[in-house]
Length: 61
Image (cartoon, rainbow, N blue to C red; front, side, top):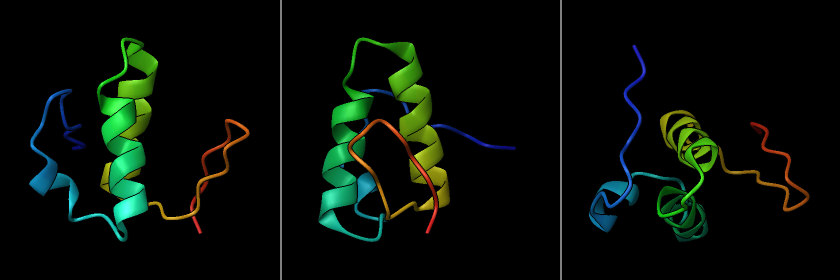
């Protein structure tokens, strides 16, 4: 069962990500007003996705 992190979660929890860049992107998504962004952030967090395309596509390595 996937447990998605909630908006406002402490930054130290995001440090489990592969890089600080991932953590900063996920932190931005978590703080978004759009619920879909928060779901994407949860998926990125759960899967430790490192390769992120800025064209709006998110995919695993």
